[in-house]
Amino acid sequence: MYVEQATREQLQQWHKELTTNHQSFVAGGLNLDLTRGKPSASQLSLANDLDGALKGNYIADDGTDTRNYGGIDGLPGMKALAADILGVKAEDILVGGNSSLTLMYFSALFGWQFGFTGPTSAWRNEDKVKFLCPVPGYDRHFAICEELGIEMVNVPMDDNGPDMDVVESLVRNDQSIKGIWCVPKYSNPTGCIYSAETVERLANLGTIAADNFRIFYDNAYVVHDLTDDPAELPNIMDYCRKAGTEDSVLQFGSTSKVTFAGAGVAFMAASAVNLKAMKNHLGIATIGPDKVNQLRHLRVISNVQQLRAHMIKHAELLKPRFACVLDHLQKNFADSDLGSWSTPEGGYFISFDTRPGLASEVVKLAAEAGVKLTPAGATFPYGKDPQDCNIRLAPSFPTVEDIDKAMAVFCNSVKLASVSQRLQAG
Ligand code: PMP
Image (cartoon, rainbow, N blue to C red; front, side, top):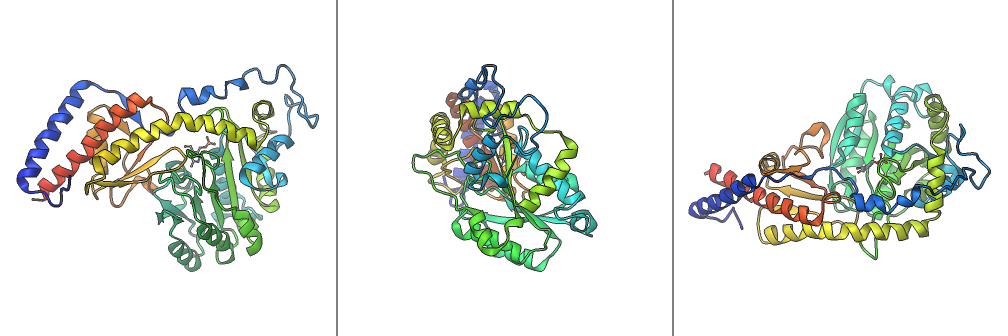
């Protein structure tokens, strides 16, 4: 279907058919949800061995009684595993509670309030504080900036990551830019993997940015491959060491989508300077993280080999769900001017771009027909997609049968919105 080339009669005919489909979906009373990137119950069950894994033995290999207070930066075993996941040394790791988002929030808060290198480096001292936000991106990153009153600046993304020409020129010319959000592997929502050139240029930002600039490098999907032969993400710290910019990057990860989304283990990697600041301030908020949870994780997944084997089981559950979404998109839109989409090889999302100005209408139509989609605009700072075209599809949670039904509604909604827009344009 090409709406640009269609005659008015064709458009009117399509409009009639699509409206009939829409009405039958509305009458069908569906109640489906393609919004958040939550693991399905079957995925969570893959980690059910966590329950009872300790068999009453709470003592870690290094002798720590995990039931007691302490260990602000985590058990040595968990630091070693996290270091292997993020490609750093164990001494560069701080293990947190269950949520990497909390570590990101605290990092931003501490950067704002106290500074990573003492009070003079605190962002709150400055007239204006800005973060670069590659778009489309992750709404919860943007929410952290909004909460702290940090101004967000959109930066376009392509298949290699953020447009680094734009990033470098902004950073070079504006010292009020104090950070950038990055999801370098299977980016949320486009699914791209940052190229070696992008990673190297990010690592070099520390040479042109303000001293208190930090890259928030959220590697939430670092082991979440859907293919047998996954692409490798180049190691940003290798480039940082070459450029002498180790202090400019804070890396984050967690097992939220490896074990239990609500009871996993989160961690961050950073330079000695940054970790010292984190530990000082985190140590005021807590006497230590949940080491019992860290230990039971180590009992179930003790090394990266076991982790990779575990992630293959996740991929087996996720693959048919992604395939179902992509199959619908391919069949409905491959030969059309109605939209474009990403074909990710991992992560949790598929990003769909409608014709400009239609994302909100598509989300509204789908909702009428009983399919909840991520709100239009959610993938942009302040919830404002300047083109009103991006929609994030999250197929991990529903069953394949439900995704199949939801995608039929989604595709019809995209077509109906597109045809209606063309008709209105006259
Ligand atoms: N970062 C990204 C990019 C995510 O997509 C998500 C979950 N949707 C998170 C972080 C949340 O991680 P956690 O559960 O460790 O807080």
